[in-house]
Amino acid sequence: MNTTESTRVYALTDTDIIMGEKATQYVLRVRDLPVEDKPRENLLALGPADLTSSELLSILLGVGTKKEDVLSMSGRILREYGERAVVNEKNPQRLADSLKIPLVKACQIVASFELGRHRIS
Image (cartoon, rainbow, N blue to C red):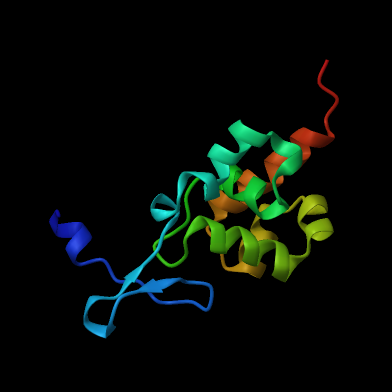
């Protein structure tokens, strides 16, 4: 384990799955999930139609932040902002401010839905 990993601080959320006793607690992350529960692997195995909106958004975002893993973040974004509101939001700054997510993540979300609206031929 390198120095940055050993000093990393993580704030627990209601959606975290915790393993072990108090002194040896470990928060499960996407990389810890079984292969059949990972969004990218499910996309490859099942196709996009069989994934939830949260799983699709987590694939788009790629990674979470130091404060929140990508699956928790994508679920929270859709829950707090609403699926239709996220799809129709065109202002990344407003999205970032409302959801307390990095501006880069908000730009990814806005750009992806705008790309979906464009007619590419």
